[in-house]
Length: 368
Ligand SMILES: [Ca+2]
Ligand SMILES: [Ca+2]
Ligand SMILES: [Ca+2]
Image 1 (cartoon, rainbow, N blue to C red):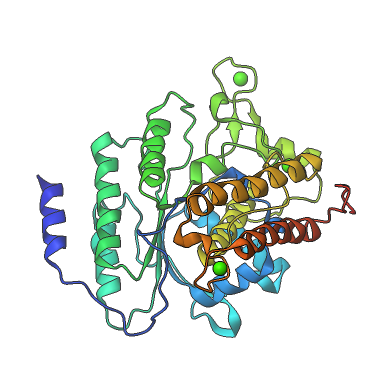
Image 2: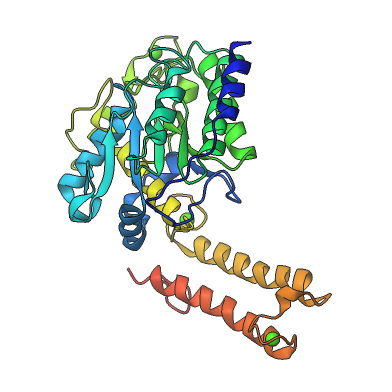
């Protein structure tokens, strides 16, 4: 009953329009979900132009407590390494504007709904210029019921309807050592499914800390938020995947202070954050590791060729035969053989551009 009242009251608030910006952002109306997970942590794959555009486009308010600070810690590491990843409060000097710990609290603190009212108060302030809202959990997905998560999802969705100019980032809750069968994983899957079906933006906090950078999986080994896991299946956590990976890859991890966890976990979260920002700024997320297996090689070229060829075949099927408006590729009002040639040219150019940017020579060898 309480949830019903919340939604009813919210629906009665008139929509507020922001005088500050007119750029139309993707939001609840976007065509596809944007899921940021463990496959989104290779910072070198993100084209710089989209990082720059994200810094220009977005003004963030990020409400979190200690676990949520892991993202900020990782962002600070990147900031210390490169001017590209600058962020500060007001967005001066070309940095990303991020109001850290604004609003106060987290998705479960002081209760499971206060974050919603705080968000609405923030966005209803005529002085507020924020156009992206992020909230993280502390530990409250662990003990959440299905209804608790529905409350979260419904209120997020409600905010999107109330503030269509603002983007909202969903999150899963951090690992707690209960594995694939634990309530945490089931509730995280509930969040994931909702985001996938409804085309939301999800920062998959738990998925990012379920894998090491080589793609080895630890959720089924009862990994927790410290990156500890049960290596021998005897029911107690005896190893730490972050420590193991760092020992095997010297010099590839920061020494940042990372709340409740290993600095590698914060590094990965900070990189995933910028991957998300680039996607939100318009990057399609396509990388040279096209088949996402961790290697850039001939298999990527083959997959890319297949997809580009398929794009042409789909166009022929949907636009060219039978003739449809989308067949007029050169927009001259006439559908003729020139359009077919244009489409063929377009897809081959697309393939050539990708090959060139990824260092593939004509015979499919990689230059680098
Ligand atoms: Ca063990
Ligand atoms: Ca690959
Ligand atoms: Ca034409």
